[in-house]
Image (cartoon, rainbow, N blue to C red; front, side, top):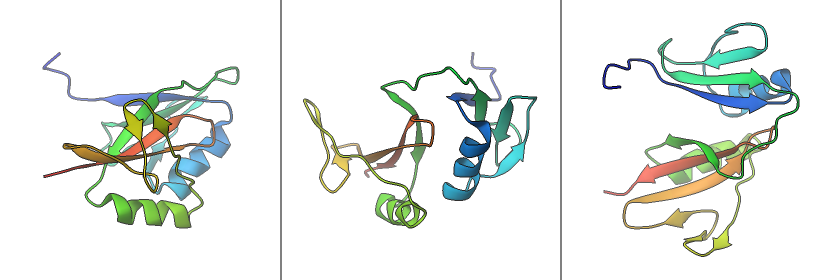
Length: 127
């Protein structure tokens, strides 16, 4: 496994056009190309990225599918909120958000969903 030089997170989507628009225009990811019919690949470097895969009958997971590491979570959240993203709040054993952010000794994190119901996260490492 140490020889892997490309990683792709594959997310199931029910509506490829709607999801592609969200990832490109709401999140501001670089739309690389359609990988093949029924999928779309987002990548800054042409190798590592996110592939949206059309699965009309899919149901989103109840777990975080993807987390984006950011340097300033508050600034990133504000930017995404201006683009229409709504952040979630949780009050669960071991996970409680305050103003949409959960914190521990290692990181700060905030969650939101894409247009398909996939749970996405922003996280900032605490130094």
